[in-house]
Image 1 (cartoon, rainbow, N blue to C red):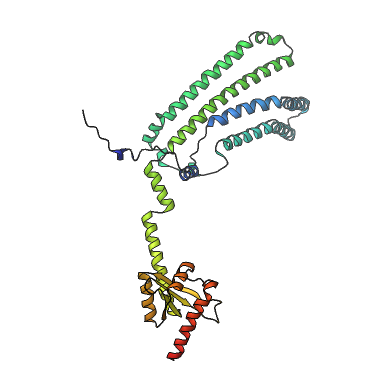
Image 2 (spheres, rainbow, N blue to C red):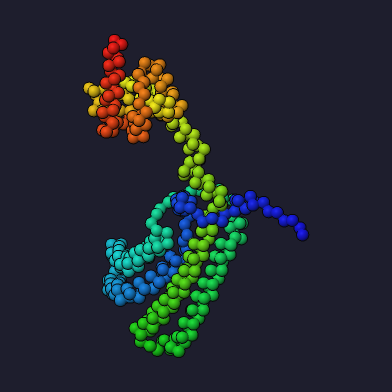
Length: 361
């Protein structure tokens, strides 16, 4: 049997992992979000149909007033510029009253369709010039890509199905459409408007179904496009948390700096309390400046030896008191005042040191 072996490193760069929150945020800042233009189109069509149906009486009233105005004024117009200006401004104002509410509805629904899909955000990143947009090779790739194929399929489906809906609507109106000239003008207009309304509603609902399917596909494609490899996730973690080796060196450097500051503070100490070999704690007390004695240096093992050597170099008295040394090491950090329950023991040591200094003087 043949021996098949796989190098798993070949798959290390494969993008199989869901995007992290940081990658999603970076993509969002670049304008890369999951959205479908079909949602806006479908909502626009439905909004337009519903607005035209709802505002039909209002629009009819404005049109009647416009026609009545022109019938009255055209017969009396003598061709002067001022009269023409009045008629033009009147027509313009009526047009604004008719079109304004519909345009406002379109703007509102366009904004809502975007917020529904991607939330509220603005970025100028997609507007920046990119070489890939004018690169012929990239252009051919986009033309023959899966996305282009899906867009083509959507366009073909919309053309055929909208055509089918129009055909179906025409068939439904074949009974009365040839005789429309025999109807009263108001009835004819009402029938035509009703037919257009039902057709628009059907087209809008059909486009809404396409929009839902397209949004699902766009979201799936977006999730695939921002997937990450395991190596990318590790690299991102290192960038966010810091390289472990770098963090280790930083902590080591911080410890070295803290040790140097501690050693520089030893000359200000009044006494070094020792174990005698395992612990060393340097105590400083200035009654006129401090409420209680404080620890200026502490350590165990090799650090304790260095503290004692540094203290000896500067003539700091060393007193052996194992129990007190252990208690101070465990309860007090560098720069902190000693606990109240250790005051008596430390005061006794300080008094002993002060007596030694007086005798030497």
